[in-house]
Length: 358
Image 1 (spheres, helix red, strand yellow):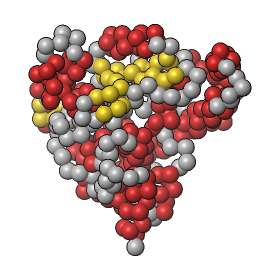
Image 2 (cartoon, helix red, strand yellow):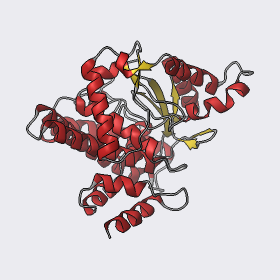
Image 3 (cartoon, helix red, strand yellow):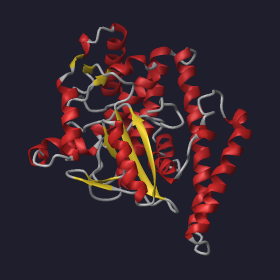
């Protein structure tokens, strides 16, 4: 697999891998099927978990201190659930955990979903073996779908297992590690079945803002750590805005009933190529680092763009709600815990936060 970067693997984090949640329940049933997807992925995950050791045995005192401090901050200061997640460590011989496949129609942003036991319909499918992910891509491409494969470095098993840390995480900056841990602890705290987009947007927002607050409180606003995370957040926000502009342009095309499918596909390529040219021209005015210069070389398709529609809200709902709370992230998390499976989770979050502030 090509080395990960901030363009191709825009988040490098996935909230949960549904196959793992069902693994324990159906391993015995899958044993009779040699090609059982759940069996293969579940066995691999269990192998990692069984090979984990207490974090104290990682041999890296600074890493141990940092992880412990981030967990303490997330639990005691933000109010995320106390758990044994990220108290164990697994040595792994690569710099990512799994390859995740996503797919979409070529002429619209209609996602391809997979159905899994327990968690139901999901917009992605994970593989620990990259070759398996590539085989899945070929199957989907034969169905005339746009497909995207990305590497992820972490996910939450939602309390089914004690989620470990992996050896490649020792190289992460404090901000990146805090974002990952807080993001995944959000999923272990709040998970609404059937509300994938809400779950992702909530964790994305709290993970990012929680990491910024952690760095500010532990290192100070004048520290290189804070300047790094601030600059990274600004560039990421600008990149997401650019992608959302491209998505909006394509949505207009896809909704035009006067253009047939062939015409839409032709115009789609023109729009994407024009966006890449515009990206090059505007790069210096949009970004402060070189992290996104590779975008013009990315084979952008609807599956890639759909990920941004899934992870990032276009209406600033969570940012606006956070401001209305008095920029109290703990209050937002407390309100999120009150959400039930029935009803609109956004409306429930607003109501719970309003009652919290009364």
